[in-house]
Image 1 (cartoon, rainbow, N blue to C red):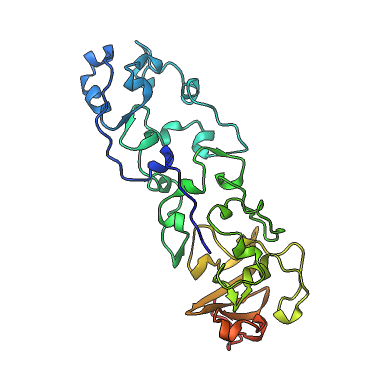
Image 2: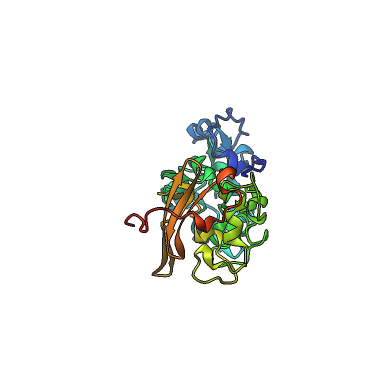
Length: 308
C-alpha cells in the first residue's frame, strides 16, 4: 500500500502554494527619502529581515559604485554574513556558483523564502519539466519538488533528502530506500505473501518481493541467472515520469550501454512485461485464479513484445 507522510509546511514547501501575503510594515530608513517608491514596493509580500528593519546598510554602503549596487561585499559572501554556508557533499549548482539571487529576491517576495517564483515553475527554469507522461510520480504531479530534493545541499546524490540506491543491483533494506519508505510501506516489498500490501502480485505472491529479495533458485520463473544482490527499485522504475504505466522505465542503461529494455502493459487485474532479464510474463491479482499458481505458468500469449 501507499501512504503519504504528514507534510511539514516549511517555508520552502509553502513556496509551492499560491500565497497572498499582507502588506508588511517596514521600519523607516534614510534611503527612503530618495527611494520612496522602493518602500512601497518592498512592503508587498514578505520582506527580507534587513529590509523589514530598515537596515539597508546591512547589505549596502552609503556611497559607492552604482554598477555593484553599492553592496558592502560580493554575493554570496555577503549572504553568508547572516546565513549558514552550505558544505555538504552535494550542493545545488546555483549554490556552488554563489548565485543566491538566481532563486531568491534580496529584498522582498510574494512567495515564502523570498523565492522569485513558485515551485515548481522556478525549478523548471533550469530543469526539465517532468509533469507530463503516461505515469507521473505523485510528488512531481503536485509540484512538490522539495518533498524529495533539498534545494541547497545534501549528502545524497541528486540532492535527495534521504538515501535512495540508484545502482542496478542492491541488497534490499529499509536503509537503502530510506527516502521511498517515507511514503511507501515496507510491507509492499518485504512480505513474500500478501493480498493487500501491493498491487504487484500474482494472487497472493508478492512480486516486489520476488524481484527485490527472494533468493530461491526458481529457474521455471524464467530468470536466466539469479544473482546476489537482487534487482533494485531503479532497475525497473523511473523516479519522475514515464511513457509507460507504473513509472516503468523503457530501458535500463549502464553508462552508454543499454543493459535491457522493458515493455510493460497494464491490465484491469494486473499486467505483464516483455523484458531482457526474463521471459515474457504476466500477473493477475484475482486470488481465485492466481493465489496458488506460480507466476511463471501464466506467460503472455505473444512471444514478442512491441517495438521499443
